Image 1 (cartoon, rainbow, N blue to C red):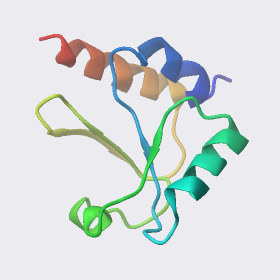
Image 2 (image 1 turned 30 degrees about the vertical axis):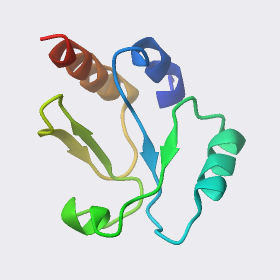
Image 3 (image 1 turned 120 degrees about the horizontal axis):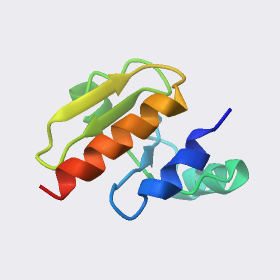
Image 4 (image 1 turned 90 degrees about the horizontal axis):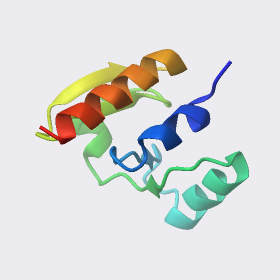
Length: 98
């Protein structure tokens, strides 16, 4: 089974992808340490004060994808299917060049 870590590198040059912490008290250094420990190839970011509320993120591991115009084109809570993520990344990469 492929993991998101295996799928993402194919699209890294065309899709900006960030893992955003859900706890606003967690420091960027802590997020970066988690990224290194889990060997994630993507960058991490801290949420803004109202980001989780504005995006209606109610549980950990919610995935939200925005197209080049800032429109939400994908939302999923919990785990994820890497085949599905490949399709999402492909769609984002294609929309970025239009």
